[in-house]
Length: 588
Ligand code: ARG
Image (cartoon, rainbow, N blue to C red):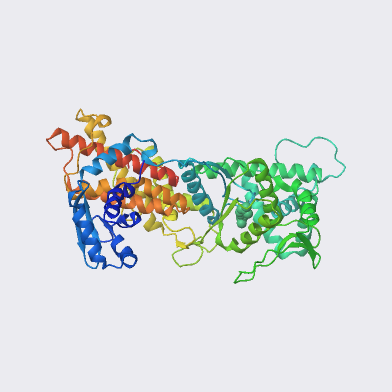
């Protein structure tokens, strides 16, 4: 379906052409002075130079020609040369009707669907999830949903951090606590137990203890490095123990992500590509890309146009060990082989920007990817507390994701039960749904790259630019529709009418921008555009609602028209929040 601006522009472009000017000049934009007009055309200003005429003269000519238009109900040339327009209200009725019947409410799917991999989440196995991982999960999930909605083939890959020193730390601590476990017995030949020798709760305590010890005792750290080395080089017992850590930890991660309404198509990790590293390294050496520098193996990635220094990409350390870089490059190799993506998007903390710049350049230079494969780094800012410093617990520790979610759920529960009596069970369920909207909307409504303040008070408020406000609007619409049904009406067959008031026309205009907005949210990888849009749409709806007595209207056609408009507003809002990764309850 054409975008509303394209549709409205066509006629104007015709007038420019008729008057002997460039067609392109006739493009309309949404007015930045809504008090004066709904749309504007700045073509006369833009064309003045080329046609050596005063802009106002061009604008007057066009306004004269456009007098006959039935599309524009008012057109005015104003100094110094703008064209201000008001649009025939009937257009919106037609446009919305078409939207209602079109697939995806008029959002056109990509003509040539791309294959896109989104690398997001990135938790580190056996380390507790913290709020830094929250942003990657929330943003990545939304980007994935938007791209899918646009008709692309999208694969979400969690890219577990499952191969690092944390594994050696845990194993060393386990060995200190339970030295007689068979995993540490080098002469053991039999089958290892199926059950892990620890629970998730124990694991959650083991890692921080071990991490602390490694900072205090040099010998512990060395033992942990040794254990990591053994694991990475295929020690049977360590591998078996690693399997247990993975099993227990991944099950817990799945539970956590599930409660965030985040899910991944691939649960691959750093460990999955280790076998590819030796081959990749020799290829890079043989092809002359990688060379030795101070014992380490590196690939130069600086470019002439660089304004800041971009250090070489290190492929192997001087002791021959692989690094974070090596694994990311091997992962690109694997993805190209198995998925052949046109585009890989990484949703990672923006502090890793330079690192990804090196990796991307290295992947291009060494031809792991072709020139036309896009690699995008979507870096996000820090989630801060009210004090402007990275979000912490009350006693200054790292805030665990689970606790944060728990706190918000409690706050929401308190708010929901404050003024209403619902069953305990329903209140708990609703609180969870609304709390998720508070967290996700609070995050997504900011441009990803910006830092933001996680303000529980503000995010959980039912008023203002918040998730709960959007849900409240949806629930309000649902309740009116339900009452209409109780009165014997059927919202499903209600037909839209021409807008009869300014607020109604504004609501319809807002709805008509849906496909335009989604396309740009996708183009710019910018979920915050969806938030801004649904906030506007909710405001337009609530203004309309406060000025219109819907259910007591006596003219049946009129009432039905409003009901149809409400139904469409709800559909657009619900589709939008689904793209953000949350949903609305039935009541709240
Ligand atoms: N595990 C990493 C961390 O916690 C994030 C992984 C990001 N993705 C990647 N392909 N490197 O910092």
